[in-house]
Length: 405
Image (tube, one colour):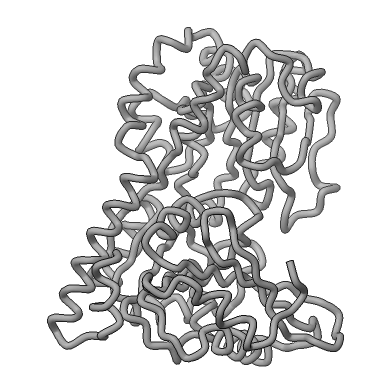
């Protein structure tokens, strides 16, 4: 990957496929961080659009050549643009630098679709005139640790400017539906074929990944980001109550001090893993854990990993996150437990239950939430909104992109 690009190199890089409309995604998440909702949706969007994923900037010590963009293409055809900014820039200067880099990258082209994951991007994209603007609200970012004070204000402005809003769960839908005339709930989907590999006897009977192979069973596993949304005290208490159980924690540690992680002989922090590796880990787990803290940062979450555990055939115990309780606990597919005593009792019951007894019921629910079906439903809503906007005198860019939506 080249370290920098001049304008003459940038423009051909993002405009190589001239017969497809441009979808510009503005994301607070990095493409290579954890493969989740944005990646699942945008790899599908890349079949019909040129997808440009403009991610959160990286900060560097001031040096010649900064600010600049690093560009690369994924195997699925998504273009990733990463702004590299001097760490000396204040907020206003950072916004100005990102606007200049983005304008140079676009070379005067207006996107057919501007797809927002973060309201913060409005600070450097408000001057654009996309054919259609979409806000895929997957989290209430203003409630997260270290959130910018500007998020609430920019969030209100974004809702005023976009054409359509998608939400990543029921609680978010209920919070946003009165703030915009076109809000639609799309709880995160699941790649059943990928995670279903964990059910295959070849994986379950094998030694598994090297860093898990020597960990005693039963194994209770977590995969995902380890941050302020995890109840570390609960993890510690469960491990203390059952020293004969192994807690396998897979995922990167962000925004919290790694020294704050509980350390016991039966807690194993294995770090982040690629999505391709996850089925092999899940195949070696006797129970799944979602020990979310019950705080402001988890009030609106609808964890993507819930259906992924079920697709993998792993029984699951979760703390009482509202959307998990309503969408999965009420169906008897996820055990809900509020404290260490309840978690250990629920995990014991889940591990004692024959897996085949609930797989068929889980699969019936999973059949309706594939990423392909979610993207297809989103496409229909986008196409209808673009048609209505064009009929009402909206952007010609939207009309030009309709055939590709």
